[in-house]
Image (cartoon, rainbow, N blue to C red; front, top):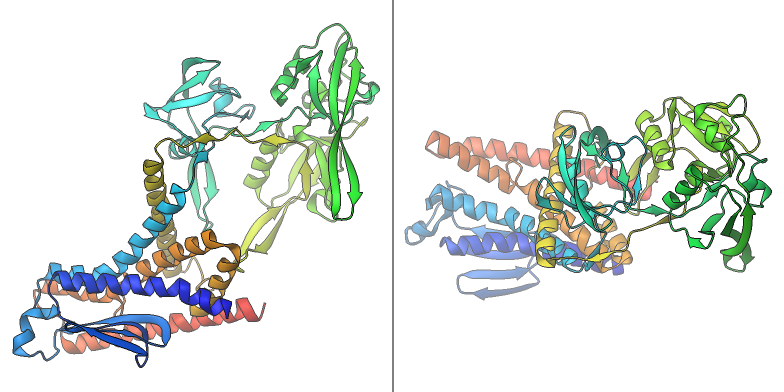
Length: 556
């Protein structure tokens, strides 16, 4: 019963908004409206207000507005001829027929607007992590830098910064940044990369090689003869202070590694300990102290390549970003021979210092075999051949997605940036609502184009049965998810109704366009044939969509 109620609550307002658009537009241009009905079938409730009868029917799968003269060959009484749709100028007919889909396209703007208006804080445009060798690193950007302007345009959030950079691959940008309280200028050229959108279509995107999160100073150790190992430190420990000075980020730790003192170093560190209890495993951190005497000079051991030379550093401390914390059983990583505690030095011949670099290279290579150079504690570096798997998963709506599966998890405790209040929330909500609506419509247009050109199958089409299931699932997730689903389906309804298929609003708009070109209406016989063809197309698509939903929800 709750799913039926959720379905009616979802689809009812969308039908009402659509038909209300037609009704109001018809009233504005003085077209006579005989009936306004929500639902199909014999009316359960009806009331006449003026010349229009308003009805509520039992089948909540649609609705309709009866317009006088919608068929140009309809017989019309002389007294009502001036109020017939067919007697109105073309612009008025376009207005009335397009008003329904337009109402469905406007509703998501309102829903998205109020959704984004509830947002009070957002991530600031402050750099947390910079990948070595990236466009940002070459331009001199560092963790802690705040991007204030890009090419003279104010940047208020991390998302704004990402959007401006993403749309400028291989284009030099002028950045104004705040660095240690001073404003400086930097020029950077985002590198062109390709990412698949929600429909799997590769799109060019500019990348700086920066991330918003900061990494905690977590360490890794591969040299058992190092002062760090002898002092009791192990991979996964988190350094909190060095000689009494607090250490907050991995960059603070790397500064020590790069230039250690000659005297005794006193460290305070946290070590995670797992404790089993009734509801699961509790992870807590135990504080410890250690003293290290850095080696007089770095000893480069025979057999170590450049990527592994740092393992023989004066302290033996290394950032934990490229150390493997866990390897899933029977995963591609396990079959390749990767072990917990291993340090990844190179991927495909490219040296890596952050796990994000590992992930980016593997994403680019997909399921192609790739060579990894890794090192275990006390061992020489070794080469492994890894081939990721392409797996599938289903979301809460039983929509199937593919993803690359590696099967290894890294060390690395990341800290999100401190959120900041949104400046100009009304402007922010308006712009975000518009961007979200335009993006969804672009995805729909791309999917339609792929289906027409046979690049995408019709197995993703969903019928009213699917909407029924979606409504119940979204209602279980809460009001926000439910309203977001309503916005998405409303966009779909408006988009589909504008398609030039006879019997849909877009089909009538097509007839009007042909009339404008021919300077006379399309013949009655031609309209009947076109409408019959349109009906067959719509029924065929509905049957395919119904079949998809039966398979998805009952035969899975």
